[in-house]
Length: 202
Image 1 (cartoon, one colour):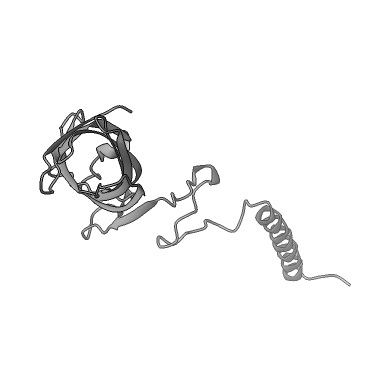
Image 2: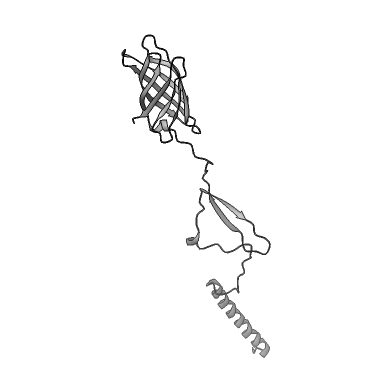
């Protein structure tokens, strides 16, 4: 049976369409077809993995919002470390643990060694170790005080005996440390007592 010319044209067109669809599908599978792809401005493409920098956990990120029509927000970082307004003042009793010299009291001039046993911030604990050369009397007791860095002064008050010679009592002492740390001098605030002068040995 013969086909009409119109049917032949339809068959030819149908075959061409099928062939074109097949080629388009193959090109699409290869990433060549389908027309252009558009990415919304609100969802930018991710950066290349090699360009991604991990956030610094030790920093605070501050986003500065721009005015309308300006460039994208600027990211500013700052160190998260806390910096005090002033650094703790140096305690000279921390550096020099033994101070040697003498003091005057009712028994006369007496040798003295101030041995620092503990420094915690401004609080100082020490041993008042004395020896009166003319009589051979010697003893020691614990003292404690608070160093004032503004004035470089400290007052030590006694607490208990370590070794007590006969007829001796514990006395306080208050004085000032030279700005170069070379001398600790002051007085023994007790009736019949006078000045003391001590120099660091180590």
